[in-house]
Structure formats: structure tokens, C-alpha cells
Image (tube, rainbow, N blue to C red):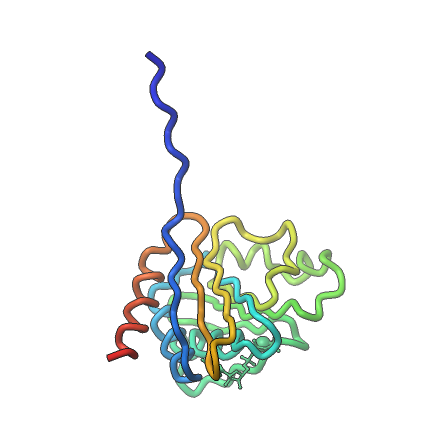
Length: 171
Ligand SMILES: Nc1ncnc2c1ncn2[C@@H]1O[C@H](COP(=O)(O)OP(=O)(O)OP(=O)(O)O)[C@@H](O)[C@H]1O
Ligand SMILES: [Mg+2]
């Protein structure tokens, strides 16, 4: 009798996190930060002004210092920080003119060695890391809603932290 085929690995269900105001975006970032490790990559999707930089700033401040200045990397493309657990790369690819620049930026190394927070990840093309946490920010009334969709193993703690932050805010 042939053995049944191994079922395909299924990803955990996405977490849908309401973010009624900017404080909730900060809370989500602060909740995610402690469970992130070098090699983890957050892909931050959403329209112009969705709050991608705001979420990245909250993560970075939780990993560095609450008063850390975190400018949008929209012109520099990359800003690097010394985080509590290693390097943190904040990347905004909106102005990327040529996918070849991705190699010049050193992103492939950073994906292996840093915590990476990537705005406009659609620009990554084939450089998009297979294992990532996709965080999509959408408008919801005056606020936003974040949908966290994991790809690859090891995102349970991040999903749990995000859900716990949302429950804490609702209390
Ligand atoms: N949950 C929220 N509800 C309402 N406003 C929010 C929320 N989170 C963040 N904001 C606000 O959204 C605005 C835009 O944020 P931000 O600059 O982070 O957007 P962005 O997605 O990085 O835009 P860009 O694509 O231009 O880089 C900021 O004024 C921020 O305070
Ligand atoms: Mg931004």
C-alpha cells in the first residue's frame, strides 16, 4: 500500500488587527518587536500614507530607544539601526528605479542577518524572501486595519503578540 502523501504545510491563518488610531499602530509595533529575531522580515504593504513608516518606527523604537529618531527612508532607501538583538534595517523601495539596485543595497545579506522592515515590498520582485510576515495596512473609517499573513515557519509568536496587543487595547 503506498503511504499517503504528506499533506502540504499550511500557513497559520492571517491575524486581522484593528488599529482605530495611531496609538494602536504604535502598540502593534511594540508588541511585535520583542519576538523578532535577526533573519525575520516584515513586508509592509499599503497605500501612500497607510502607516507603514509609523508601524516600522514603533518596532524600531521598541528595539532601540523610545526617543530614537526614525526618519522615513523614502529618499535614503535604507536606514540601519543597532537593535537589542542585532541590526535592524528599515527599507522603503518606493523610489527604487531599477531592481538591480536591490543587490547594491546589500539586501540579500540583510535578509539573513538583520531584522528587516520593508515598505513597498512589491518592488522586491525575485528578491522577496520566501519566509516573511506580510503586514497589509488598509483604511478602516478614520483608522486602519492590519492583516498579518505569515509565509514560512516560525511566525506563531508574532501572530500571538499581535492578537494579544489587540485584545489589550479592546479592554
Ligand atoms: N491606526 C491609525 N489610524 C489613523 N491614522 C494612523 C494610524 N496609524 C498611523 N496613522 C497615521 O498615518 C499617517 C501616515 O503614516 P506613514 O507615513 O507611516 O505612512 P506610510 O504608509 O509610510 O506612507 P508612504 O507610503 O508615503 O511611505 C501618519 O500621520 C500616522 O500618524
Ligand atoms: Mg513610509
